[in-house]
Length: 122
Image (tube, rainbow, N blue to C red):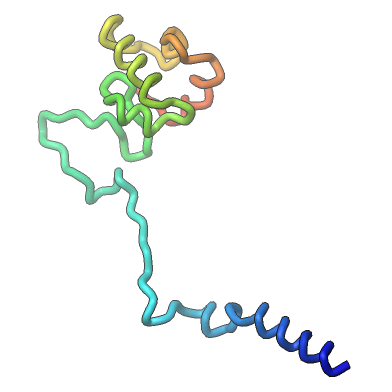
C-alpha cells in the first residue's frame, strides 16, 4: 500500500512540475523571449520613388512585377522551378492581363491557380 501511494505522489509531482501558476503567469526573468517579425512589415527596406513594390501591404504579390523568389515565397505549392516558368512566360508573352492567364503557364494547373488567387494581384 505504501509503495502505491509513493508512486502516485511521484507521478503527480512529475506531471505537475511544469504547470505551476507562477510559471504560467509570466516568463522567468532568466529566459529570453523570442519575437517574430514579418519580413514584409513596415520596418523592412523602404522603396525609392522609382521602385515598384511587387508585394502589397495585404501580403499579395503582383505577378507582373514579382521576382522568382517572391513568387515562390508567396504562392502555395509553387517552388522556384514553377516561379521561373511564370517569369519566363511573362517575359515571352508580356504582362498578364488577368490572373486566370496563369493557367496557360506550363506546370500551373487549374487547382494550383485557384488556390493561390487570394495571394495574387495584377
